[in-house]
Image 1 (cartoon, rainbow, N blue to C red):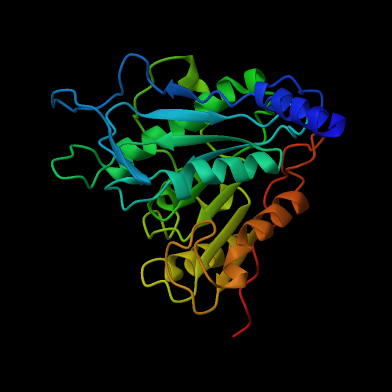
Image 2: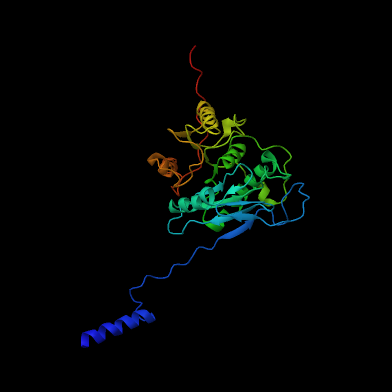
Length: 308
């Protein structure tokens, strides 16, 4: 009887929350901050009345005010590198979760701070925007913003890369492998920061910006795509060959029998499921996880033409 009474008392104590000594400490949920790239409004010629962003399931569209969502690496694991992520979606919408926020948390596990960009969409019905102008301006501004605020996040401003999926991969190539057009808007001190990324990651990138026009000064590149991707296999191989021939450090993974948009955890193929591991290997080999890493050296000498 005494044992039964003791058990009953313990059960009641557990129900009331009195027995907390063995409970794990409460976790503080991350605070996700929305950062407007242009607090006074994005440059351009959009004369439409203001309207809210539209989001559902995994996507978001109607981006009128370009912004970043910050995912800082935890202080105990922060290696000082950062990546600005450009989700894809054909410039009609942004694949916000599988090509944005989930990627940010995966990079956080590597000790890398991440920033997911909402950029203006050129292919929405009635859009006044352009990919090479407005969307690329948003991508460059995001990179400049992260560099200008690097100290706030424990980031080395010389170890800031970009990563883009599909249409977002086009933005990577436009700002990393091509010159910035002359006469683009400059509004404040942030616009005096460099918009050249220190490294680039292109995941099944679309064809815009390829062939590249400033390949000799391009940063190290990691490129991944499916060999059966009807839109993006050929641009991936073409960019890799340009980089390789120019002496720029580059790594290419073309996965057999795979198509477009495999993202994270979206395939039944083992090789595809592990492509983020290959990215982690590449980042580690390049020294991007090393807090003492010095800025990357200039590209190697271009390869000599093969004998005829």
